Length: 123
Image (cartoon, rainbow, N blue to C red):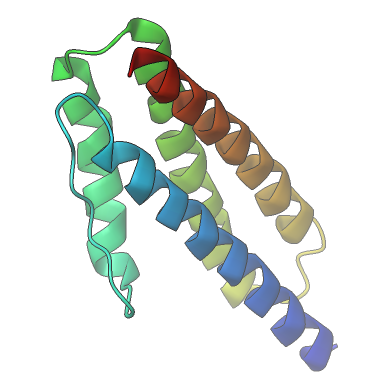
């Protein structure tokens, strides 16, 4: 079971990071770009507060409401998936955590794709 759990942790962790990287790129293209921590070494103690702050900054963003809503939804989804991931790390016997995280990340990816399409339309 440990090998399977380790494999699942790596898979879900990679999906979390990939979603975050897309969030960083979308935020950099907002009318008033919002910089999130990036680089080869990402630390959750830095990322979580930054994404939380992003949700506050979006309110002041001079952008269409639908764009702000999509980025807000992606950010909240990523934060929720991150919290579940922490639980998953501590509870290898939790059988629903992995599919829950994956489902939440699908919603985040959908919102990011919608936001990217709206940014392209604006240009």
